[in-house]
Length: 302
Image 1 (cartoon, helix red, strand yellow):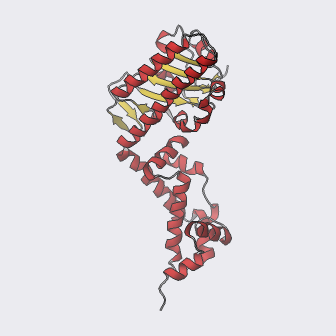
Image 2: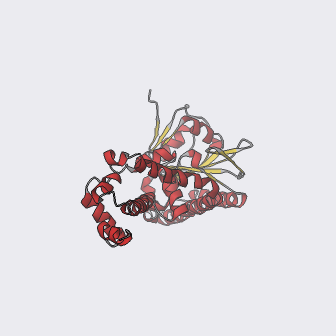
Image 3: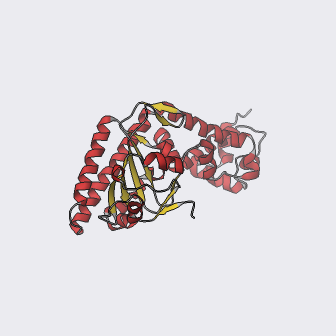
């Protein structure tokens, strides 16, 4: 018996819960109407799934913190992503689920906007917690989409469905941005940890032997999903993590160049460039002058 339940279509999902499939490309599922429940095994998605979940306990947990927004939670899963058994069990008790087959995305204008919807790659603990007014909007969108799914499928219907789905996904983006704003105090912890990880990597001189760390190194060290990490850093700093990393390298480069006891080759290796020429090209591209010229202008001359 397989350890993972693979969900590669809307029909597969509906069959697991004993529900009818009206449209093989898009569906809104009310799990309260499920006639059966799947075994408690992890799901692996081959489709997109957006869960609108009710809170069933007094407190809602996000990582280590308690939050006051109790109107519901929204969690997304994309193709290739897994929902672990604990999250799967919690999510399927009482939830509405928007299911999207990748072919639905490809057949509509949504294919041009898919990169916006990074929340499909978030972990369950990074879910959106809705405020009351946001929940009202979500319920209205889900109701409108459910009503449209009752109509006969044709080309016009497909366009209308795409617009309604886009409205739901755009609301997710807007509300996630609101959540980033209201959680800035907690977000600062991850930004500060990111900075500490970068500095620790250089000051421990691991860059000399290992070179630049791969992006996954930072993701693992901050305990976040890749998408959430990128979105959080971009919201807090205005830069993507790679851009922020390069800014940190530039700051450290300028700091080290003010030390006359370090050669440019030594600085290059200390920062993980390996070769002096790579460091010179990087520095010149970002600063507009070569490291040697910068050092000459900054070092005091007696």
